Amino acid sequence: MEKSLKIVSKIENLRKVEKLVDDLSTEFNISADIYGNILIAAIEAANNAILHGNKLDESKSVDIHVKLEDKKLKIKIDDEGNGFDYKNVPDPTAPENIENVNGRGIFLMEKLSDKIEFTRNGATVELEFNIR
Image (cartoon, rainbow, N blue to C red):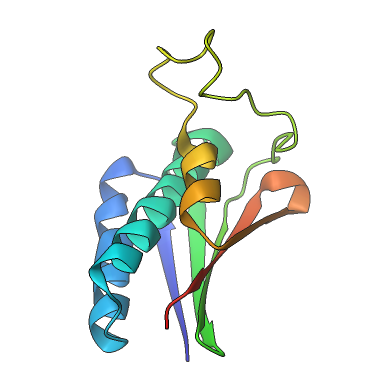
């Protein structure tokens, strides 16, 4: 099974990502705890793509590809930005960062997914979840 979604870089389009995850959850009878992990991680990844990758440029889009294989749900999110140094992201749990409003997205994606991989210099993130 494969599905794709292309959204314009507008924050309100995160609702479409939420609907995609809702539909996947229903289609594959994903448990509530795994559903929550998938939803939060996918929303964070799409939000980062819109805000940081495409810099809210509505002429740019975010591509989301979903693939189910061998009880693993893979969600790949691509933006049109230049990427970022994903190996040097500040730790949001460090005392100097604990009160920062931003900077928790990658941390959440790492904690909530079973596997995370950045490619294209950080302009693509692939999240993997064991769903059974």
